[in-house]
Image 1: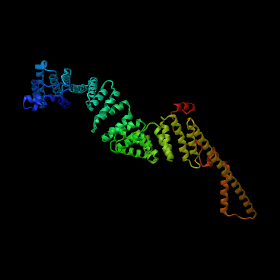
Image 2: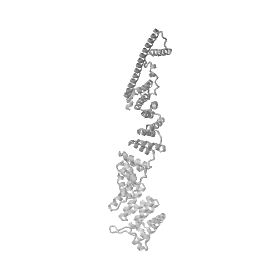
Image 3: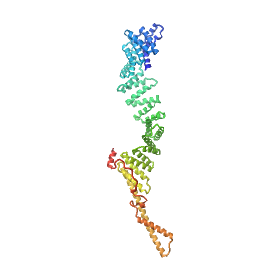
Image 4: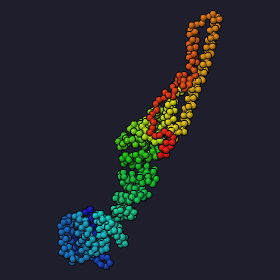
Length: 535
């Protein structure tokens, strides 16, 4: 701050004494002591005696002996203040302001500048420059509204006189608008834009940051995105600019551009935080490249840049499933499900396992989901339906127990509105399969019974013939006949197979089906389920 204002003040005020420092004689020095060109036919010069005093004090200032210089200016003002011409007085106060600023007395320096301005002894151009310095000091002292007033006045006068406006003045004016209470971002737009327009070939980061902030606060992403495009070109190493540009594109619905910007930043090694990585991964999913998203997420998890928490595990599993990589999805989802006290993740795991035709594992996962509970009515009904499907898919051609177990799950699914129709269709199908199975067994028994009766009748006829011929049959043949007769008598005595008489069916009745999982917390009655579904 000290060096900045020293340079600013000396550039105008010290021109009155710069010639004195190298003068060979007082008359030559006085001849060169005109600090401004003539304006309106009048020239302004320092009184020779005042000029000599100022020259000594100026030498102290150049030697950074500001305390001594301040004492000298104080003495000069005290001894000659009332007798000084307006030009001399304004010049002395202007230079003392410079000394005070270098001593960090900004408020005192600003008061001296105001005295120099109020004295009105300087040419218009220097008076206007004082207004600029005073406005800067007001900004430094956080008197933002006063700074705004002064900067606007200075800019207006500069334009009127045809003087080029320093882009830093526009920058300070815009910054002051953002600091007042409440901030006036709308008024800040114009000056901030003019600051950038007038900055020349060398980009100034502070100017761009300020305008970026203003556009952001106003929600003007249509202007903010092009500005950020320039910023990432000027400062490509700044990660914040890349992520902000991606966000600006996103809120405009330009998701493809938002994704591309974030991807470029990631490849440049700028994207490292978990939230940024997850955002990029989700873009891969959105734009139908889940394999790359899953690969990236898994790599960042392994590197420790992304937590292996439940939400991230679910996302990784979903990405692998979306990429049809079920073998990779299943263990990830299983890890998440094991760490969850609610049934939703086990339900998802059961679905994936079922799609991968791992029916027994799917059955276990779905039973775990129903036992944990905590699912909404829709998922609960679906879980029962899928459990029935997993059980039925494991049944062999005569596995009546497995059919019965599957039917029980489908019967539970009937209690839910969303699955009632499909569950009823499954039950109808299973009943048809079971009926066909038992009908087949009965037909087989009838056929076997008829064959037995034929064999028994044939054996009796052979025995009578052998008796008439007084011929003894072969003992082995007799044994074979006796065994066959015993088998047939047992078949006929057992009667035809049925669900109540399954011995001939090779299966078990419905009462021997495995135990069901615990009933879920949701009500089973369809009327109550309708209410839960609507919720």
